[in-house]
Length: 614
Image (tube, rainbow, N blue to C red):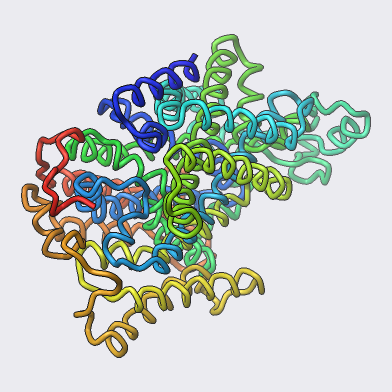
């Protein structure tokens, strides 16, 4: 039904005079739809499968997803108030068209397009694996992961070709509503069935039991993968703790005692770079597209404020689900133990009662659909960049809009085929590492956007910086070793990018007074940018800096690495402190967004002055 509605609205947009590109990649949507589509696109595969899998494997370190979301909002509040107004005034058709407009350098735009496209491919692969893994678990492995990914790819191609942005937005709206309410109810159900995180943390919590591993091995040998193993039979004379065949479950402190330790130096560094690299998330083409389709600045402001709160509604239940799998997984059937954390919890809850069966069925369907829609958003952003900024600029400069849309359809098929092939070797517990690489590559073009919006910097210096940074990431990824003990590859790449850009600007480009490329009366200059943003008051920079500092302080650098942490209500003290600072950073970000005084103009009232139009 959504597909047919999207196709109808796309045709209607064309009939009203919109070009093929605008009808496929753009549109005008209500504030509510923009909020829901942004939520659904931002919180999907990584949230549904990645966060629980991270919590199952690494415990409370999964809180780094919350810190990362704070850095995402910092990036949005820094870039989007200016970028959106410029995009509407200059009538951009692609997410990276700002780079060409500002610097007039085809090579810089090509490099930025590559930095945007590779992370899109990685994220598409994540969505494919999430969908395939969940479908495999829900069908009790009747549908293998590879078949699920192939089915996903076929449906995504159909959505992308038929409805474009309309299909994404409309499907996102339905899924987001179900996911929001579903995650809130899930949090309550998990507490009722398994207990809160505070009640599971101690070594000897009320739910402590022991599973008979010998019986478990026998069930597995007999092929009874759907049966849960029995508990150990014991007496006062032979407590289970002394019996080698008995394995504890039900308490985090007993089943996974290392989860209660302070993070090691390596974990602290991973936490830091994961959070810092998230700053580049807002440069994803599909996120920039959401800023472009917002009907007004005030709508975009509201979307960002919603995104400040949304991680607590989605990530925390996901962390709870992962910890429950870690604590109780040994007592579940072999099928549930082999499934990803979210799928395993879903399978177990569906056996408890009719209400939980219906709840998890609805949440699972919404999650699967949201994953598909997010992939569609990613594909839409990637094909937009490839069609307009690469193919149209370098290969077919005279191509019609219809031709560019058809080319985007071919690219869509290729990207999904590559994702299915590479997704075969990827598992959900690797998503955190992949997200670091994805955001690290996006950060390589952050200097071009930041400098272009606020300063005059030569394109040559930025090109040198991106080449140095991307080369560092590529070499480091190939050799598989960090350059320093606690500095990851993406961190080294970003640092070298910025350093190279600064040196190039100082010693090669004479302080940045020159402007690269062809100039003309329509060239986007810093003076023109100031004219475009004059009607609004941007978010307060001091408040934004304070928010960034609070987000930085939420990274657990304080305690003795690897030592037993003090428990506060069953939770490590470092995790409590990190969570409190994350809440404080969120409050500061909400206030920062509130200081953004927007102009009440809609997308249909874009500036028509020839001096501000390409």
